[in-house]
Image (spheres, rainbow over the protein chains, first blue to last red):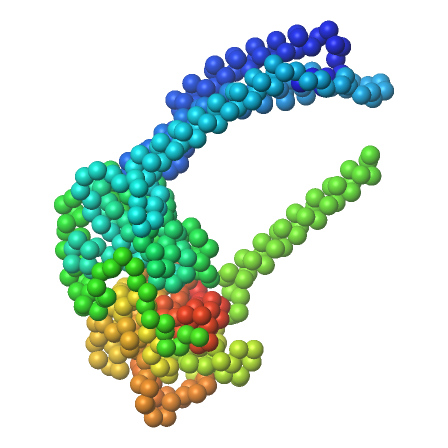
Amino acid sequence: MTTSTAAAPDRREHGKRVLLIWIALSVVATPLVAVFIDRVIPPGNGSAQASEQVFDNTWMTAIITPVVCLLVVVFTYALTQFRHTGGELVDGPALRQDNTVQVFWVVVSSVTVLFLAGFGSYELLKNGAGGGQGPKPIAVPAGPKMQVQVIAQQWEFTYRYPSFGGFETSQLVLPANTQVELHVTSLDAIHSFWAYELGVKADANPGIDNVAFVKTKGPLAFHVRCAELCGLWHGYMFDIGRVMSQAQFAAWIKKEQADYAPVTKNLPPYAKTYLPDPQRRAG
Amino acid sequence: MRATGWKLLGVAVALAAAGVLIGLYVGKLTTDAGSKPYTVPVSTKGGHPVVDLTIETVAAVGPQLSPGHPDFVSYLVRDAQGKWLRRTVWRLPANATVHVTIYNFDGDSGLRNPLFGRPQGVDGNVFTLDGKPTQVVSADDASHTFAVPAFGLIVPIAGVADDAKNQCGYAPCALSMAHRTIEFTFHTGKAGHYRWQCFVPCAAGWIDGFGGPMQTIGYMDGFLNVE
């Protein structure tokens, strides 16, 4: 542990100082992180899943705060106390094995990492955490769900509402306080559907029905982006979605059904995936 | 020690300069590359800017307009002198009314998503196809689309029949040749840099029709520089 050029009798004193500074800093910093950092940690509070992600990230950040504090203290202490201030450069004392320190380090690291792995896995499996779970999801929230299909293509997302006659539209609108089952697929290349403030991210692959769940909260405008490099206009493949009240959503559905009626009859029957025939031009 | 420090500083400055140059080059590639901006002439009506934009779509751009890729499918724009230019970055005024006329000399390729057969974002959600008001073009009949997603604008372009007489092989194509005429009106909003694209995978010879001219500014993609 010691690489100091300070005299050997001071080693324990240095150790005590580092320990005391570390404990003091951790006692102050950890509660501050646990209480305040959720205000700046993404993705915000736009859905149940987003709030859970903020909770998870807040607590995982709080748990690693003492570790970060230890690194900062050791680095800062070493830089300020073990400086070479003139005279001839000489080698420091040899590093020697210390079983107590090694065992302590291995045990503390292992417990921390295993706890974080367990905590993260539990949170992930609880309700899917807003991530795409593939065609057979294993973390399915209880209760009724409204299905919405997300169809990616170069370079726009479109959305299909099977519960409302299967019409398709270029806008993503969801009702407030509703459990939504998103079915994400693609008609061409690999894309990724990312509804940032809702905490939803799911790959959109051709021929694959990737299911993700989100429980909306109150009215909200949220960003939709493609998160997978998908060609020339990938950087422009974004949009604004909306969560609106149940009454506004019902009115919106009615309007969209009427507006898109001329083309709804041309759409293929609703399915979990679509594989359009190769185009006549295609090679 | 001092000489080493200067060397390190020199390397750092060179790396930073290289990063800036690469950034500028990538920025250029993703904006105007392959197509010099074309300023569309503007008139005014009641103090409001009005633009007449005349464009055409051709199955093959031809060696005159694209010696490197004569077989690429492409959009062309007509300038004030009636000359067809292979430019797909267009300067338009903000908050203007834009009357668009598209002459399509290409056959139908088919839409992968039939949704784009319905016009969106145009006045009245209706456009005229060969002079007839039209609400929808079937997926099989679509040849191309003209779409500016940021404006919510999508217009399907019906194709020339396979058995039509006097079809155009290479651009520029004369209006005496077989074509479809699409007319619609939309409005530019605030100033900005908006991409436009074709949603029909119409690139012959590329996997699923998505490569080449579909991925290259100057053919089936471009920008509206609204100023």
